[in-house]
Each structure stands twice: as C-alpha cells, then as structure tokens.
Image (cartoon, rainbow, N blue to C red; front, side):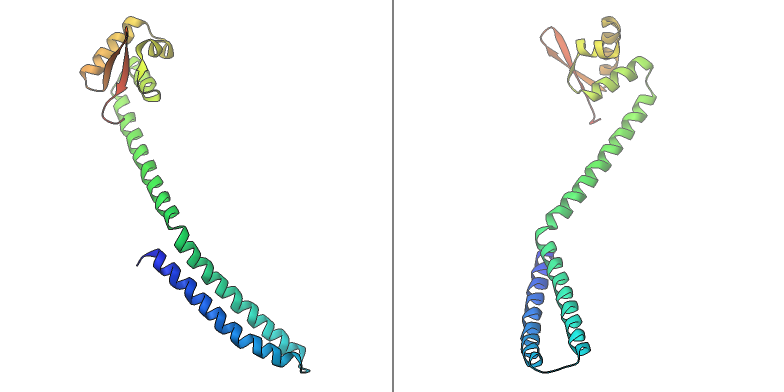
Length: 163
C-alpha cells in the first residue's frame, strides 16, 4: 500500500478519534466541575485524558511522517546504492592496480583523482620524467585502461571502464 495513503488514513483517524474524545470529555468535565468529587477521581480522569491525547498525537505524527518524508527514505536508499557501487568500483580499481608496476600505479592513481588530467600536470604530480610518463601512458592506452585526448600541444588523460 502507498505510504501517503496510509499516512492520510492515520491522520484522518486520529483527528476523528480526537473529536469523539473531546465530545465525551468536555461535557463530562463540565458536569464534574460543579460537584465536589474526590481529587483522586479528577486526577485519574486527567491522566486518562493526557494519555489518550498523547497516543492520538503519536498516531497523527506518524501519519504526517508517512505523507511528507517518504521521499527521504527513497533518497537514503539511493545514496546507499551509490555508495555500494563506489565501493565496488574502488575494489575493482585496487585489483587492477595490483597487476601494475609502481610507475603505472602512481599514474593511474593520479588520473583517478583528476580524470581528464593533462599530461604535463600528470608529470608534475607523479614526479616522473616526460619520457617515462609518455611511455607509461602509451602502454596503459594499449591495454585499454586509459584514453588520451589531444588538447593543444599536450594530451588530456581519462580512465576507461568506469573506474
């Protein structure tokens, strides 16, 4: 059943019960107020009234929550799914890195941190010579792990396969 429909049903029910309860309590209170009745009986009636109103307010609040915060639950589930997918991708990336040498690992990590990094920036970030960066990038491109895109006199480097 739809949460909004359940929430609306709870709100309508709690309001209806509250009206009925007030229709009973107000005449009873009016009748009792003029009489000299034991304070214990008045106290019991007051406790009953407070408990009933508290329970009805709880039901009303639950209905309100179901109507207006259903979207929040869906967002939480969506975020959990996204986090799970990121973790799976990170695990795949770590497995991929285990098959690479140190230069390739450092370059792949730098590319993952800044997808679309320029080759010159990659050289500075990894502290590797231009020639070595070029060789490693060519090898990684042959393996299908990265994609180089010409950008002026240099290349921008992107990861492939959704890492």
